[in-house]
Length: 518
Image 1: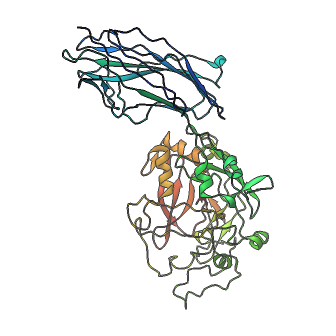
Image 2: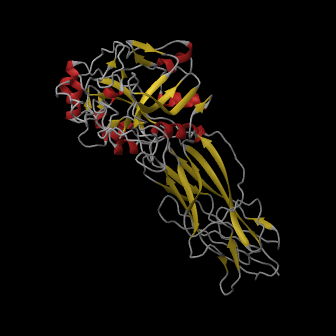
Image 3: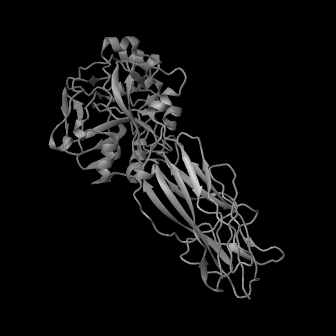
């Protein structure tokens, strides 16, 4: 007795529903229907075109106990979309079984994630694909064949699920076939179902320029978009394509300094240069307020000396600067005064340590700020808290909510990624290290070390103390917003071979400031 197995398949290409019958037969009793090309072309930008090579697919003469494959139907997709596309498939009826009218016999679909080299259970079916991928820009002259290999068998459900995807502009022929395995006693006849295919273009990549220009009211200043116009929605909408970091130059309206900004592997937007704003410059002070700085006007008043300082002897909650910002370090480690040095901000270290590793030394040193200055004068006296309490790492650490970063930006959080407490989900230096290299602690050696330094363009800028830049080209130190204890602040520390994302050091030293978009 000859068994006949037939499956009708509907192709759903590029959202519109277009169905064509496909048959899978074992010794078909009726004549085979003819093949027909199906082509749907979208007027999209980017373009996406799909062609189905045939609307017939069938299995002939299934041998009980053996896996037998069908003929091959090829779905040809052409696109100039640099983000690529996704092909999905499903059965269109309420079941994923191949059924026969008038009987209870069926071929059951194997699991969607079965990944079987051959079908191992009687009366089951599954599909296999083989992609011929051609790199190019959507024209036939760009083809460079890579035939690939047939995948293992997987099953379908009645819900569309991805079966194939590409993440670049390609020309692809996706070969599709099914296979079935029959038992000795299954009823003969024709078994059918319907398969739907959908081809959907991935979202087009969004650049920083696209994101800024799409926001109503955002304009350029001296030819650059403004750092102060950065927002969560702008950063979130920018696309990281194929692991590449999108970068834009933005201008800080306070001093008209231009900085590189990038969306890094943690999907946060980071300043890729050390902050270099001169807080002692009278012109900067005259326009620097809470509309362009991540600080209140009161804190800036303490920072610039325009608001009388708190008297710690009589005001137990005094936490603000007791003197105006200055560059007069003079060997002092006083913490109640905000101290900076920007005389070396454009210095580029060219030695073997700082400059010999993937051109990291090309990045400028930037400014140096003690924590009193880095926090915009808001955490200066005592332990930097209103209550005078010491806060230890990491779960009870408190983050400064004011600093010298531009409006819309702030210093990154520091320390470990805590599971509870006020620093839960913090440790953004550590989060960045984790996203780049999978590290949950310190990083030692390459390639993780080089990848991290290159991603953030972190120079070995050293630190400033006693009117001197120390360890430039050997170490780099970067403040965070997170307090470690009464004397130390969390931050990022690195040397020529190791990175410490949870490091803590004295608040009195002059360190570099990096900013992360809020």
